[in-house]
Image 1 (cartoon, rainbow, N blue to C red):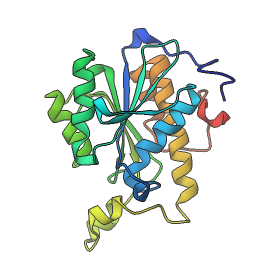
Image 2: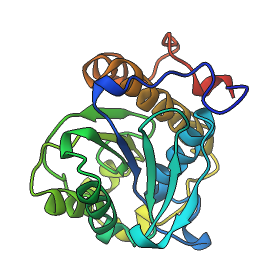
Image 3: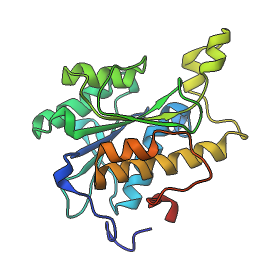
Length: 220
């Protein structure tokens, strides 16, 4: 854990990521839900980087500016389906290209705890990411998907997607979810320091007992 604002954690501005946006729904009633795992990851990432969130009405978002860098963390205070309004407006105003924005979000198609980093692609049914892609008018937006489970139940039928993503993790899932948030923050930090390709090579696999050499968030 850093001793002071961002100490010991260097963000390489030359690697291009200038904005990290976590997706979720605002309000206490949504805290701890599967859909808000992107928010939870951004909270941990801000803590690691010595940054604090504050409300900025101009962007409909909670913003955290990382000291001594040009990096900004953003949590839209629109609802999930309108995430692109906040992310897109901020990026356009500050002339941040889509390729320099990392989106952190939940994914029901991935097993709980699995991460998937990609530099481009479709929304895959995630409405928050769909909104972001519409506002950028391109699919070339880097993203970090965090598995929250559920695909196997949808395959069998009888499970409502909306109620699933808006539910909290079950007690037996909580430790895996917490570990996924920590690992996702590690993955985002690695992408910021060593680039997306390196992060993809290291984190696009199901977590095992072998620890990576990154582990910044694990020092908390």
